[in-house]
Amino acid sequence: MTSPSDRTIQATNDDATSSKAHAVKRGYWKDAYMHYFCPIPVHKSPEINRGYFVRTQAFKAITLSFIKSTNGNCQIVNLGAGSDTLYFQLRDSGTVPRKFVEVDLEHNVHRKISIIRRHKLLGDIGQRSDEVMQDCLRYSQDGDVNLLPVGRLTDLDYVDGKVLLFDTCTNNVRRYFAFC
Image (tube, rainbow, N blue to C red; front, side):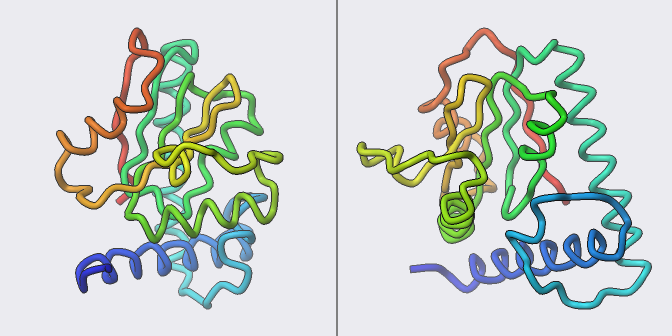
């Protein structure tokens, strides 16, 4: 059962997704995946569109710079990823880290997994048989896909422990990012 604060956080994901989708629809930047996560965006003002353009492009540029600085031998943990499409954009550009983990509240994760599976955005990832992997997606260069639901995004030790459950590349540099 979700708490009122979790529902509030989930609502920020929905609002941010709608804002990004509207900016994409208006041509502020290209995102071939946003329409899967928000097929009918709500109208936003030009100031909101510009703000999301700057934040989205800055976040992408910082992430790309980090990946390139490590020649892809890194792990990125995207905290509060929600309906973010950054991984798909990185994959399309051919610049992906060794591992890309998205962490969010369970409801947001399940919704994203459902969209990814329904539209086969990662090919046919199928169903995972073991209980832990069933709810998790992580993207990696070797085709593994995990997205990790957690209950407490504010407790980084807890999140880090969850991320380590799926970490098979301990020699790589890990960076935590949060799109605010």
